[in-house]
Length: 417
Image (cartoon, rainbow, N blue to C red; front, side, top):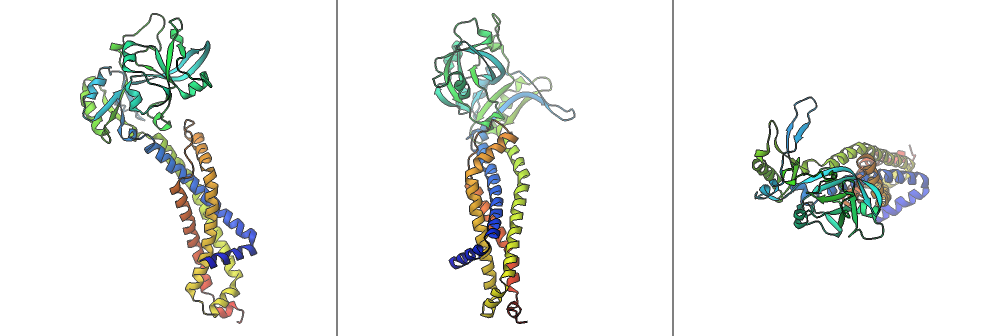
């Protein structure tokens, strides 16, 4: 094998430009395949394992009905109560339950300056542990904070960096537009990092989190009795891999919340993986380009090996005259094809190693979602599959020139006829 490798290198030195172009062409195909496979595998890891047990245990309950009109759709209403959370916890399948109410664009005042925050939310203390919320500093609010109506707030790391760059946000006070004349405002007790873009398609990201009892839209003197407030959604976290059982039991427990044609229905985080679906479609789309790149590379291998056989007709004829069998000639040509494939794979994988993260993240952010950060670099399985594919194609497309060389008549090859 080493002798074949050295022999092929000598042949490449005789035709350096043609050999280099063939290797680069194959390297390009390997690079495209490795990057696209890495994108797919990394996204699958992000979507499946990136949220831990949430992928198989998180579900959302609504009081809704499927519309029969053209195009379908779901109509829902707000009919859940706060006490429903305790009712759900009685289930053997449900670990915890929480309410998560999203609010849009709130004006705030921080250190005398006005800002606007796109999304804010209200929830109960169980939320933090239920979604594995990562605390950058401080802590989540407690049951006591919620019961006493303490004016506390948590802000995302993005907001914290904007409002309080190069300093801790803990202990700072933020006012909402509706609370401008009522005391110092809401005390920042924690800074969090959102669990990730995958969760955001099921549970939309918020940049400020308040206790459930806070009325974000209250104006002076206008409050709302929290005991009678109704909610449109309740989220549950089940025992591992028991989410379907948990939803079925929750539908029975909360059956009294059904109204008119609307019933309690469950939606599953594992079945709403929009990110993975989009990336899957993206991979199929770009897979056509990867296939073309590999196919063109294979044609390059076929061409250069055919030309090589023609140029070395006398050499092959001499070897056959000296007793070389057909199988020996075939192996020699296939070994040369293997060397080209190996070098092309090496160059393609080196390029993919340094560019897979940047290219994959750019494609995701431009074509799927701006909220997705780095997806990770070259995936080991993607590298292995891309290299094996290139080598396999090199052998398949090198087989025809090898067989042609093996069929040469030594007398004619040496020019004696």
